[in-house]
Image 1: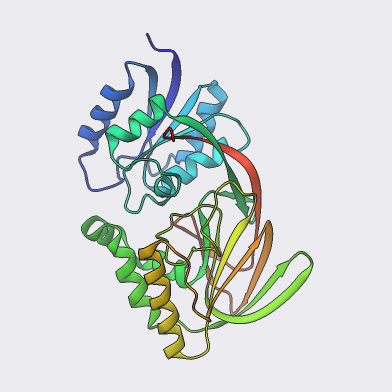
Image 2: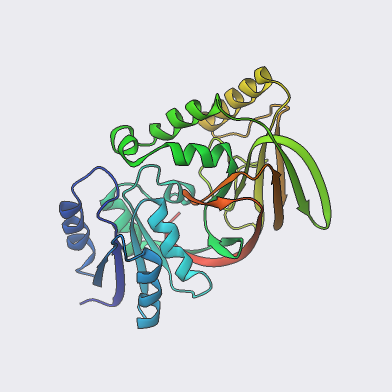
Length: 299
């Protein structure tokens, strides 16, 4: 007998698989124990709207099935509600799932929803709007914009690496002004990434000792620039660190931790929030500690 009610928000455009077959598989794995209300995302129906409606109906659980964009949009509606978020990753990078140890295959992800634990993690806001993964300024945003849907369908997560290398040659350094704790610092950079949660394999969101999703702090990684050669060396070091799951120690890679930060650039730079382009700088970002409940595997 079903004991919990859940809204499953399903993005049929995510991933490279057969969405019909994947939804049928998810339903067969969850429905015996959870009463599912399935809602499809559409171009004119955002995941966040569907999630807000589910919260208003009083469901016990909201499940996001799609890529990081879908997961982030659903999570927006759940921050501070105490309603748990279940994740069935079907996207390109699935960074949120990887960061929290959530399986990236459908059967194990469903088992996590059925038998996992509820973990409270931090949320964040960027210019007043929710962010659960990271905000990227400069190179990261240019990379996200360059990696189009067709490339992601063909190459998966490698599409971001290819796009990043392509955009690196075009990047010009810009002036950055960072305001934290009432103090202002200025420097030149090609990338500023502010992470709330990120997998250890993230190239531009490594943090001084790994990004911790429940420490009440934002991890800031800055790719500063001196010369073209030093930039190439720093990028190589970041990529090596990502492959090893450890932070780069290059002199042109700077790390900060803070609970609130304002970033201003000259000239204005593109901004990506959780994999979606969201205008240009300036931005203000703030951590919202332990504001999102997520279903994760048992330890």
